[in-house]
Amino acid sequence: MSIKYFDHIAANPLLPEVLDAMMPYFKEQYGNPMSMYDLGMNAKQAIETAREQVARLINAKPSEIIFTSSAAESNNFALKGMALARQEIGRHIIISKAEHHSVLNTARSLEKQGFVATYVPVDKYGMVDPDAVKKSITKETTVISVIHASSEVGTIEPIKEIAAIAKAHKIAFHTDAVATAGNIPVDVKDLGVDAMSLTAHQFYGPKGAAAMYLKTGQRILPLIYGGIQEGGRRAGTENVPAIVGMGKAAELAEAGLSGRMAHVRQLRDRLTEGILKIPKVHATGHPEQRLPGLASFVVEYIEGEGMLLLLLAKGIYAASGSACTSKALKASPVLVSMGVPTSMAHGSIVFSLGIGNTQEGVDSCIEEFPLIVKRLRDMSPFAKEGWGAMEAEGGNKEGA
Amino acid sequence: MSLKFVENIKADVTSDIVYMMCPMHLLKLDEQMKELDPGQVLELLTDYDGALEDIPAWCTKTGNDFLGIDEEDDYYKIYIRKRGNR
Image (cartoon, rainbow over all chains, first blue to last red; front, side, top):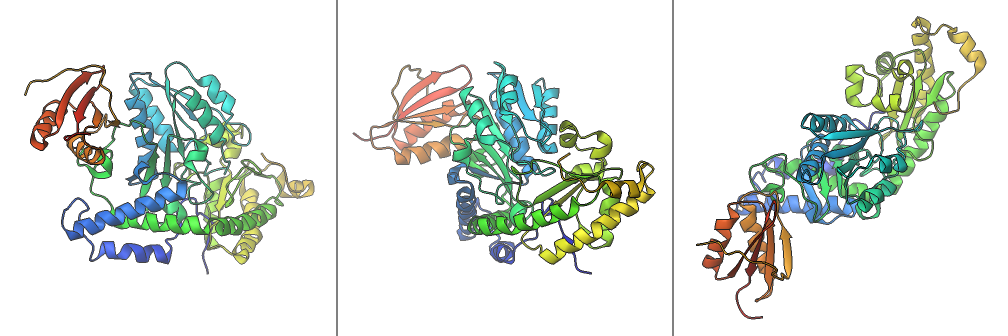
């Protein structure tokens, strides 16, 4: 049975060219970039090349790129680092309810340290209203963080507008661009952000390499103290092979962006159309302002976990909500904020497409999924109306 | 060396290394001074107390002019003039 992998938002396979670029740094080029001899200098040079490649992907200066170990670290670093650096000005931060747990829980941890956090809700499409952000601003506000695009519902947020509001109030603005950087055009200058998180495994690079963009002049308190790596802002011996891989993956993403987007968008639209033919299934997120490779739904009367297991039995890999919500069996905060009833939010299913997916794979998913939904609903005590009634009613075309 | 306090010094270049720990103050200083022309003044913003001792010492060692320190609420402004005439 061939694998049909529709969970690219969780991880992407490594491109062979990326692995090739990384290999020398696992083998003969093992030097520590801080060392003064040739082995160290070669490793240092490789990191600086990667820094230029990543900077080019998001239209930043190389000196504005700080390599980290993960997007979660970047998000923690941005929020805590900027909030603590500005705490003399005030101790209020604003985030949205569409944030990933690495932003959400960082905000909660800051609250425990005496900061005040405002959680701006989203509309039924998962969209943050810039005006609501503006209204949440107080004299004490120092940092705003809004996700660029949700990995659960795919909605692309109005970052440019929110960044302009933050700038007008002299507030530092961070965006978690994990789902977008390398997948859609991302330009830090055009967006007007002060800080941004991105990670390599979202664009066919390795895990263990991520980055934070920090605009020149923006002060930040380090999370990790020690040596002078990353300009003294992030200590710790660099993960050279992974950083090299991130650089190469960024270069390939930049070059192939439009082709990749067209490929996944076409498959996503085909998949969405097929799945919405099932009764009582609703597309989630914004219908247009969304990630090209992400199809997300809520399926009434059944739970995500059941769908995932039965899909897996057919060789189809998908997700229910974000990676951690899926394991914790919790209703996704973004779906709840969108007004999806908690019971229905448990029926969340997310298919995220990548460059390796084919039309045949999508078609087989469209074929198998309705049978899985039917099987689960037949077992479900909640599907009171029964399958027959739903079929008579026909499919749902509208968003939830 | 005793500290020298100054006010209203006009700098040609400012380098903000607030929140960066030792030895970034010396590395940045070295890096920035290389880019200046002789006679130009660098303003280094730092909250690192060790800089108060290290930077005058660095100036003595390298022959650059340590102009002095201006103390802000939560950081120092340190002024250094690159050696040689403009």
